[in-house]
Image 1 (tube, rainbow, N blue to C red):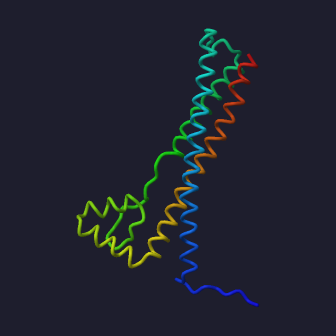
Image 2 (image 1 turned 30 degrees about the horizontal axis):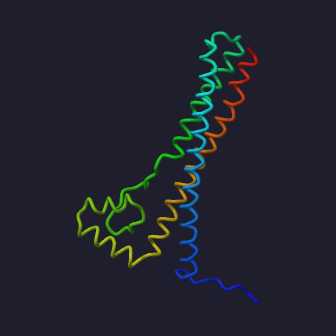
Length: 175
């Protein structure tokens, strides 16, 4: 028995694209949650470290030369991690402005059509209804790009945070 391959434009391919789009949207939300949790964890870690060190009237210059190098390297990793995690949760927009004839797939598309006038927005809505497959495919592509970027920033942020968690206490232990 051979597997049947759906015809291009058939319902199963549309259904698969819609399912994947839903998964991508959920994945983008998960990436935002992960980034937000990590930013909160960094905030708590920074507050605890600053509180303990301030109470002891400590300064990085109290460290030996290797300790200072580790401290400042850890501080840079911590800062780069924070920036990376914030970049992961920053809202993403389409890479190109909406143009007449293109489907509406994103809130920025709706704004782009609306700026051209109510009749243009109405026509864009009708065109999107006439060609739902093009709208889903465009949205699938854009959401895939967004999720990939978010996870790339999360990986950089987590690597920086991990390095900071090793370097900063290590600097204090090195003295």
